[in-house]
Amino acid sequence: MEKDTIAAISTPLGEGAIAIVRLSGEEAVGIANQLFYGKDLTQVDSHTIHYGKIIDPTTNQVIEEVMVSILKAPKTFTREDVVEINCHGGLASVNRLLELTLQMGARLAEPGEFTKRAFLNGRIDLSQAEAVMDLIRAKTDKAMDVAIKQLDGKLSKLIHKLRQELIETVAHVEVNIDYPEYDDVEEMSHELMQTKTTHVQQEIERLLQMAKQGKILREGISTAIIGRPNVGKSSLLNALVQENKAIVTDIPGTTRDVIEEYVNIRGVPLRLVDTAGIRDTEDIVEKIGVERSRQVLKEADLILLVINQNEVLTEEDEQLFELVRDLETIVLVNKTDLPQKIDLDKVKQLAGNHPIITTALIEEKGINQLEEAIAETFFAGEIEANDLTYVSNVRHIQLLKQAIAALDEAMSAMQAGMPIDLVQIDVTRAWQLLGEIVGDTVQDSLIDQLFSQFCLGK
Ligand code: GDP
Image 1 (cartoon, rainbow, N blue to C red):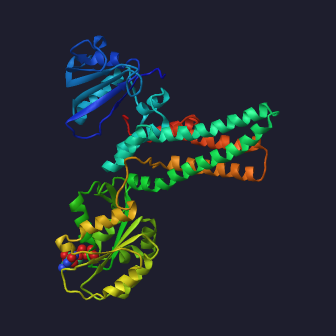
Image 2 (image 1 turned 120 degrees about the vertical axis):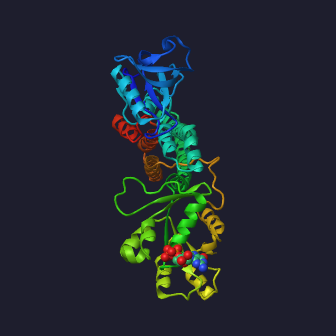
Image 3 (image 1 turned 135 degrees about the vertical axis):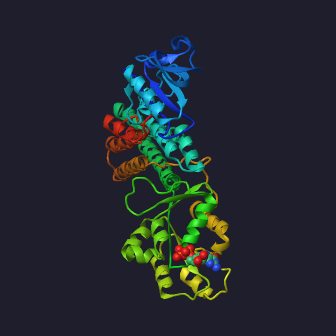
């Protein structure tokens, strides 16, 4: 257990109704008590909350009116003594409060340090810790569901089960090596090793297949809207944003003209990329150049190609169809409130397997059908966050792939008739790789790096 007591502001910086300064460590209660005017916090029961004032002990000045929660080890998030000081949300007063706790001997927590302590003290495993991070970043209810499931340890349980299967076969081989006189054990080891590795491999494959959905839940469906000038791209963007309330606009830190907007489509975040190109100029293809738009298209999970029903198809339309031929695309035939001039048969032919939706965006007609088509495309209608275990973390996906590769090697070694104790090396490696997901076999540097990705105060 770490010796020092850490402190941080655990709520987002900015104006809010309340803000929380959180302390964790042996001195947490003592430090809070030195600043607190009210009850003697060292004497109160664990898991209780107390009203009082925060006083600057050097000047005796009242800083804040607060509610203080006292949570004593071990039944806390970090398994250490935890104190949460709830104060009014002003930035200055929260900062002042944090400063005072530091003056009284607390150390400013590093990003993710609370969660890191929870991990180091055995309260949660690594995949759960990562789930905390996902939870903070989750943009829709569904994404949050997935993170909560992971926090609940669903993925960990599955990984533990698979590791158990692998280690049992390895143990079996050990027996075999120690007691070579039993011939039938040798036979069994081979067979058992084959069945078990195949089974574990299948389970991992299944997890990886679902990872794609997990990625979408976490990061959103990256979506590009394309079409000739004046067909209705901005109208589409506005309709989507208005109906669904943009979740994020103008992502901080992007210095270029690229704006990303998130909209929530039936629980799935849709990330509209390069909307600046749509907003600022008539034509995204024209503005950013064909090369660049190819790039945008390549990185998009979904393309919405808009065409105008009120005009005949142009060569440019046909070029756009060509551009998206092999990409996940939904075609929107817009302006259906106006007389039809487009050749719909031709559109169907150009669209190939892409679904076609008719819209009159000016009247906001067709948005529902579009949403349905999106849900259908990515989740066959219904997204099942309920009983599936989604792997949505890049690190986990990589480890799973490596584990599969190790098991592949074990299989080919077995097929090549290699001695079982050599096969065992690959199986053990797979077991180790899976262990890294839950944090059983990870190195310290990795742990530090992972936790540093957290927000301050988590
Ligand atoms: P963009 O250049 O592709 O972004 O097209 P806009 O969304 O700016 O739309 C161009 C023009 O078409 C605007 O005047 C819109 O009001 C109009 N428009 C968009 N959708 C419809 C529609 O469904 N019906 C009609 N009649 N006009 C539309």
